[in-house]
Length: 324
Image (cartoon, rainbow, N blue to C red; front, side):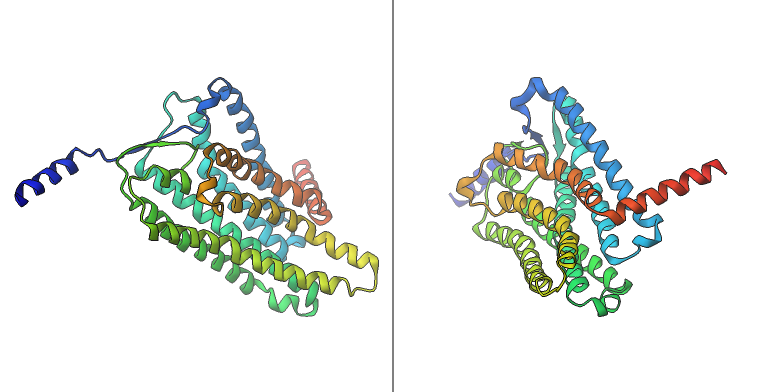
């Protein structure tokens, strides 16, 4: 009797179809608009690549910008360029393709790369907040505390933390069994859409994934908040209104980017499971995968006189070299 039951279980396991690919349904309700969306997203993507390339090249080519604040900005722009490269080209291809699929391994690689860049982005924003804190609250020791070694160390630590957390989450997600459905109501392999189609989820894995997402979002945000509490208390003691205004203006761009990044990410990853909506998540995901990387370099460049002046100098030198 035991042998028969074991044989039946073995046959059932063989008959179960393992998921070998996933189908994206993120824009399935907008079938007629997909060619138009392709054109819009392509233009936005090209503009994002262009603006981030301008920020990075200007920072590298102009010696006046070889300071920690702009080094972090260049790294952030590189991170956002890679971030969009992981998701947007595949999304653009799928908008014109009749069948929008990705292999099981491809989905795991995309999630791992996306999480690595997204987590690193969070920690980089915290490092930028610390840079602003040192610049305003301890300016006399700024060159010592934020030297080349310290900046490289902060960037390396952000990337190491992002990579470690991304590998843990991706391993937890893709070690789950996938037998029933392979339809993702999204346009890329994000955590919740993939978890939703898993055949079985352990309570422990869900808790660990949620805690890691909270760790990536809450700890850097708390560090940024502490930095800005110290910054505000220090700036309010400045005797000159002009000095207070200048100090706050150097932090405004960073605060805008932090608000957008953590606002969108918290809505996606820290929302209770009962409030999960695939259509809402897809809409918010468009904002932080396409619009946020587009706005960030624009916000920094438009609000920063030094970056605009450096860009004019770089362009001027390039024109003079061509003429000679």
